Length: 68
Image (cartoon, rainbow, N blue to C red; front, side, top):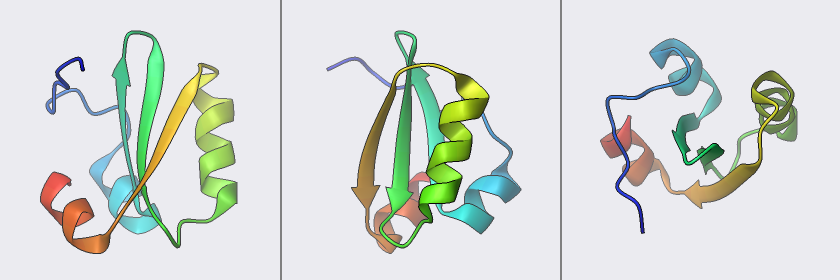
């Protein structure tokens, strides 16, 4: 599995915190880590904005806070 560069954030911290998503890019694919209660509208907007293949994984609140 490729190593993720955690310094490479693609969206502002405030957007991540307010919407429950963490976004990074690995080999031209957008990696989205999301809280389970994140709206599909937010996920859809990320897809439209980046216009790249997307991989979504659901994480719990504790993991989200640690990775944020």
